[in-house]
Length: 351
Image (tube, helix red, strand yellow):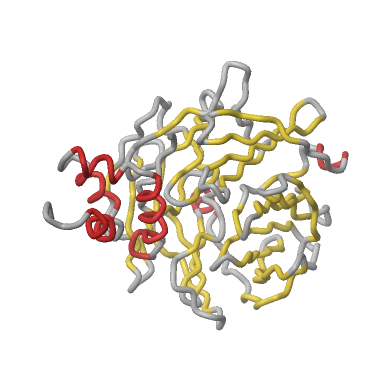
């Protein structure tokens, strides 16, 4: 390939797997420079967002493993053991958000936030001496997004001492800054639980649910361009049990799996159209699930099927008679944040 024009080399290498790009950087100085440019990383990332590059990261006290997805059976493939490259205590980390191969991680023994690419193993600590980038579970919320200039950013909503504060971290500037966040006083109650942020169409979306039967449930939206917050309604689901809204970006359209119930759970799939929710389908009642499995359960949607999974594999499948999806999507986070679905890219956590 030494005799090929640089434009041709660019086109070829933006289509190879991320790990091949990593090895190719050692070929020569010219390739290292080319493969390290932001233009190359951006184009390679856009071409990597396909199902064959998706992986499932699973973390427990003893191991951290990465699994491919076997799309014929929609199950986990053989695992590869991963060594966490940062200081931790017994793998005690939480995966809070993910985007384009980057994971936003909390180190639970110090509450520090960091960005990590599990494919390249590169990571970046986000905490500062004045306690920015410190995440408190059950009080805070985090969302990861990229702006129009391809700067990856972290929105951190902090609930402390009866007030809300919000901060944005810029990967390019390596800096946290405070932005205004005004909301209703009652949302300061610890009875309200924030979901992780879901990035879709220039907006980060969070569900905010009150943790009792008949409680208040809303969706908080953050426009990444104006950096303004607004509140929209939750889908009109029954309030006869605990309610949870799980957000997912499907082809740049926001969907929500709204669950409600007590011992038997019902799930409705909704899509957001101009701040209004439209029901797509209703799933049958979920079969009873052993309490011992709830510690690591997660769900996926692909090709019109909804899968309930654990680390041991698939529990059951619900056929959803809806438009086919061409890629695997996570539609809830792992209970305890002990895993994530990510795409293998060469996106760096730092500039």
